[in-house]
Image 1 (tube, rainbow, N blue to C red):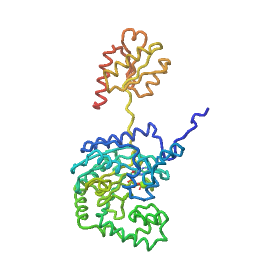
Image 2 (image 1 turned 30 degrees about the horizontal axis):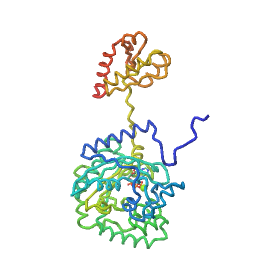
Image 3 (image 1 turned 90 degrees about the horizontal axis):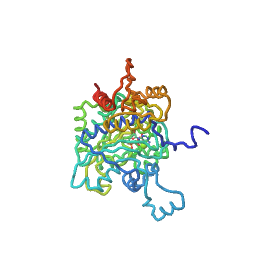
Length: 443
Ligand code: ATP
Ligand code: MG
């Protein structure tokens, strides 16, 4: 029989193995601490949503976005039957491609935005997009996002950007990232610009790849977000959105830049930066990394003041950003080490019950204890080898004599002095308590 089994993960739907998990968890923990510390509360959202939520929020009929969505269609007769009763406009459930629309949906549904309430929320989890998998582009990937509601001013835009910046600093990757910033103006500015851009692009239609021609028809601004080289070249000649931003949006943008400057946050103004989704207005921003190739955007966000009304709520200013966990993890080089066990119990044969009892007592008394109980038998020597390889600080040796008297032999595994001492179970618990204190408080 082979050792690699008969099955593999689906393309673009990757496993995260234990070594990589540590980096991910480190990143998630830092993000959680930082966001909660700034008054953001976590909201946990489902993986499946009504497909119409995205059809509405991502721009109705935008095939390019919609074709990335995983519909929960079945192909069996029973599933066809289940979906069969629905019209085209009610195509049922899909896997969420992003978290902003679900967050707005939940906030509205549960009354979190009632009578102008202000909210700072964050979420994390898997997102699904049917894209061509490549380095930094998965079909299942993970985001951590922050969304704020009820704040209209540039101060909150600056807060979101500052939180991202802090996170990069704490991860030790700030010097690899640069912040790009743009203003898309308000709805009226955008539609004037959109007309000018369409005009320009129509004049060069033959140079646009088919997907971008489609974008031009459906939602011209999205062409600015194209990754096609021909389009990127053409766009260097296109009109700039900054020339169309109206007075109020301009003032908002200037104030934002002032706050960022006061915090010493560097940014590059990028008049061609737009977000891939249609609902953004005014501030948009993106952090890019050198050295990630084409998939260089690690986090992005902006203001979306019209989305709440678009989803049936009352007028509520809103903004947010999301970071891509996989792409950020590629940048983190000082991998956190797994914390070693405080102790490893080694036992003579026939003492499984007694050793289990010892482990039970220690775990009961010391909730923060990291303890491995040897399982599967073997000689003292081979067990001690395993204890050593586990990185444990202490080995607790349980022989016939010790077991009979509820004692244990304690052996230091990380000190040159390898002398052993016999302690009662109570004394071992006391010793471990001290060691845990030292481990946690870094003495
Ligand atoms: P891109 O321009 O690279 O396709 P996007 O504009 O589609 O990104 P957003 O929807 O803004 O991305 O999502 C925010 C972040 O999520 C991105 O900056 C990126 O780090 C991450 N992300 C988006 N799509 C993927 C994917 N398919 N695989 C891995 N990470 C992704
Ligand atoms: Mg994308």
